[in-house]
Image 1 (tube, helix red, strand yellow):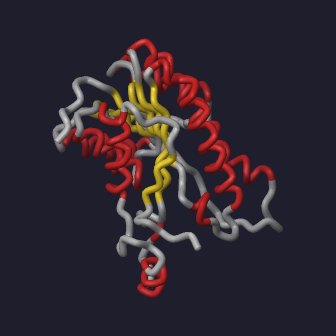
Image 2 (tube, one colour):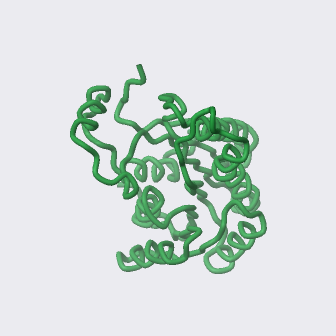
Length: 250
């Protein structure tokens, strides 16, 4: 059992539900003070309230993480209330329609880039100065194994997730001397609220291609993020860690 964190602040974007909520609650268990971000104030406060009820320390900071001014204001509000952000988890996402090439246009691709490239850039520029001043920190990005697996109609999403790998590896080389690590967690298919009920035949076909024959759960991702946020992961940077039960792409 790792030692609890003493006073560190972790920011998780898109934490009003799904993977973000699980990550926020897991980091709170480790002792992090959690800044819960979501575009929607009510779900963000629900996550923060659940953490406080469980004995943790958290507050909601709703903001549009694709807006430069909103990101700067949010990070400053967190610093004022809790201190500098030492762990930044870029989890926020947007609509993910299935759009084939014939219907795909640049604006739709830009929508994916807003969340998976622009938002992590804005977050990094806002939190890295505080990490440097504190002597180190963690930038953790949420990618997707769909970049490897591929699926018709998902090329815009896949392109943005691939670009995020480039940001991760480039920033890791820039920030290592500052004791700031930069890593990416690439989940497989982790069913959450929006997926609804999954038919048995779909599950059977999926598990036939997966070494661990069960659905991944949000805590599988949250536990990986928690490790990367910990002192034990201080020698790991520039990595893309796939968490998908050993799914076979071919």
